Image (cartoon, rainbow, N blue to C red):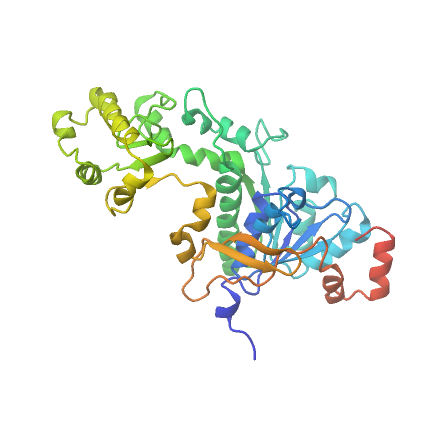
Length: 395
């Protein structure tokens, strides 16, 4: 019986050739795969994706790689070999998307840049994720998440002195999700016009969008926000982080007065803002009173307030606590899959919840080149030819 599109996902029939490595690109292609796209992950036969070597679990499984590569098939190609390029071209004959994460000139150096591919495959959507984009002063600079956040002004708002964010904001928010939304828009455009295009994703460009609020403040006042002491970075007593008696931390996010008043009633301090109106000259005094309150309470003491729907007080959870929190399990966001080789592995679910085409875990993250023969067979290559490719180090 033929599967319905509901069982396959909203991107059923879309084919993605993924040359990206590590985090931003592979997470983007995993989102596409979770939505039903056929994703073929390509790695060099003698230089695998570095995430395969990171954070090995007790049974030897590559934990980061497992987080980023489900629902894909894996092919090895040495793109420095002409025969490998011909195999790539055959793959692209019916592909919709090519995703890569090299430096801006990386594909050009291999003779596989957009100008070459767009002539051969005018319907192809070519998406490149890079640190600074394909133009501009920093085009050839190396960098990582911290560099992109620094250049875009995001890091300046983390405090005085600035502190690393502790997670890959530019990689995921700037790279993965920006690329994903652009790819979906390009698919829609191609649906109407039949024309593919190049998508130039700069993780620094996208990180700039995180400072939109502060850009508005700069535009209005002509002044840069004060690091670590502006409306979202520590200035407000009702939007801040406080330490508890046992040295844990909580997040108070009661920006609107109605929520802050609910919180104050819940802790028995409803008169606080009557005695000390919420004006800037009183902020430090109010913060100190809240600091003293929280230092006198444990997490257990605060549990009723955490559960108050309108108090906007949240415990700052550690990762093992997130894993065991009922909310995430109810949402299908924490999965434990029984891998045939490694046993139970932790997975995060898809953040995209469709009513008609729900997420499915179809394929375990593939071994290095696991589907090479299968894919090449489908492209019309015989077993003898595949053996020849292996001998010649093409695959």
